[in-house]
Image 1: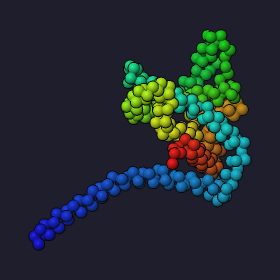
Image 2 (image 1 turned 45 degrees about the vertical axis):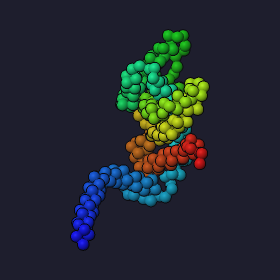
Image 3 (image 1 turned 90 degrees about the horizontal axis):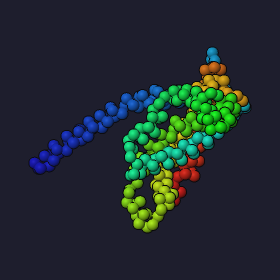
Image 4 (image 1 turned 135 degrees about the vertical axis):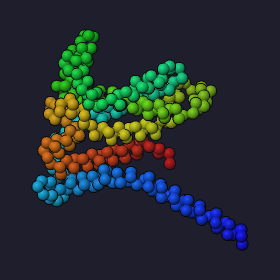
Length: 303
């Protein structure tokens, strides 16, 4: 009887102790939940509701009218065409360069790895506005790039006046801005691959190139997929680079008009928050569709 009572006495404090821990955990989570609801969840719901409304002196429900209007707008189609061209031109090259640099930095024969990692990562922490401003001076008719072309006997390029080269100039800028981040990301993935696997491959007679394609790339595949999805989502929201280059003028033949700039102009210049919300939600839907496609074709299909 005394043993039973002693067991009960010992178990009661454990339950109360567990309850205290549970309460404390909820207490720590609560501020984040409140912050998330106020700053993210509620604005998302409001913007989705706005996309079905005409917003002026009064709020008027118009159904799908905003979506129909933006799809009939040639500038909306142009903005998506431009950003998709820029993404197709920049993301694959960014991923390839990042994988190449990550493999180099992961090599045991490379010295000064800390220095090079810092150098590659600097564009990531540098202000986008500052980077775009500097590159704009490089692309000027008498800028660095045309000066280099003239030095090797080539004709200067109209970087900021020809529609094709406008897109290429933005592609070059975005590649420079994003390679460093992805390099560090892939380097972390490479360091998670066991060296014993490479040693076994060498014993089996696999060359460095064969190791890269048959071992490194398959093991790095989840990281590459994640980096590609993130680059796609961030690419759709591109704003600073074209805005610094041309402001809201869209450039010649609207070559610099992207979805982010179109969203800004619709909301703050045209003061049409209903259509702006509809444009924003098309970005969400397109991001979801592209992400699903990438997971479908780039994910693990073994199962």
